[in-house]
Length: 141
Figure: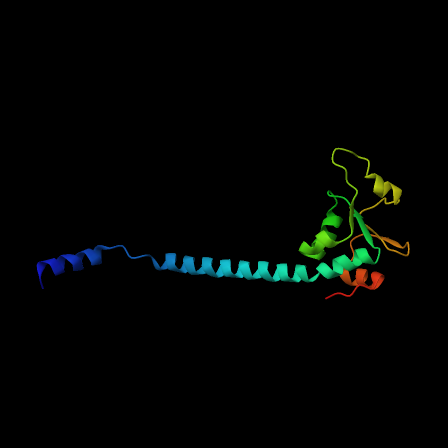
């Protein structure tokens, strides 16, 4: 073997090879990133499927009265996902004030969330989408 060739071989042998643990960690990180991406994608698709349902609630005269600080209102909002922006929502919480918004006072809302329907019926609390569908006749996807 030529001296140059031996030198290159010795250099290759001295190169640091990545630890098998680094390779395993990289694979786990890649799998986790793909799983998180798939979860976010399917959640967004499920949420956007509810856009029509949320819009229908408003068309049928239903309204949800809630407050930004209310945990049950947040739970109700979470049921709609990103489609909540299409839901008929009235914000009762006024930042820096203990008095609710005038629209909520006028509607006689005392607890949050409160759903008021076109026929005048009202229910308090967080309700599943099936219940709202039955009350309004809006079809769930």
